[in-house]
Amino acid sequence: KIKIKSLRKAIGQMLQDVFMFSGSIKTNITLHDERFTVEEIDAACEYVNANKIIDKQEHGLDEDVIERGENFSQGERQLLSFARTLAYDPTILVMDEATANIDTETEKIIQDSLEKVIKNNTMLMVAHRLSTIQNADRIAVINEGELVELGNHEELMVTCETYREIYKSQMGLDLKEEKIEKPAFLAVYCILFAVCLLTVFHVLNFAVLLAITVIVISIMDRKILQKPDYALLATFVCF
Picture 1 (spheres, rainbow, N blue to C red):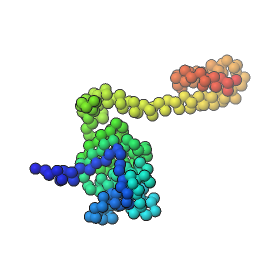
Picture 2: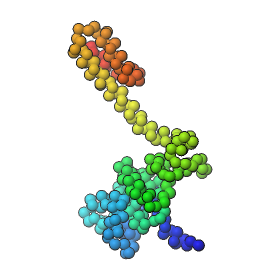
Picture 3: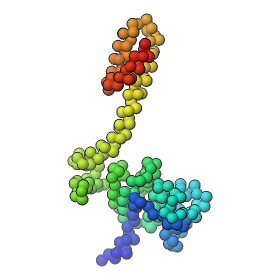
Picture 4: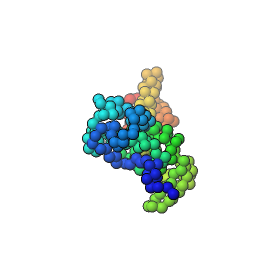
């Protein structure tokens, strides 16, 4: 029979909202447990890349922390919480929306740390941000309290429409940005191309030159013809 106390010792957690106590960075990591040595604290901080935060502080581990850690950013508080969790070397790590409220840079730092942690620990992750769980061995898709599908990322992209739509909606933001930039880049490129043609073949009739420019634009990206402003700009430069 497993005792509740023993079970709790084996489980560490990282929550969406991190609570920091008034005191120092050191006491927030050890929770006033005097059994921890400075070397063990440093090792835990370095393992999750929290040492980058501590090295910037004037007093290092002895830097003051005010109530709720208001003198640190959300990302910094999350990294220190991560160090606090791993200092106790849990067998099972539970992450409940741990990366939901942090910036992209801090998320990447935590992701790098998780890749190391996952090799030696069991991790249970709750997340809406699929970039956090994409590399998990098993992903459970839950909708309105019911299990919809179970599998890894590649399997769910094929078998689960709910997962696929969420993934497309989140990844589609980046794709949309690329589509915005692409026509503008092509327009500039085609305008320069038209100017070169105008310089070399200045004796050509304007209508012929315009036709060549439009054909080049069409070949490079047909979608650009749907943008009258780009075509008009190219025409103006040719003129």
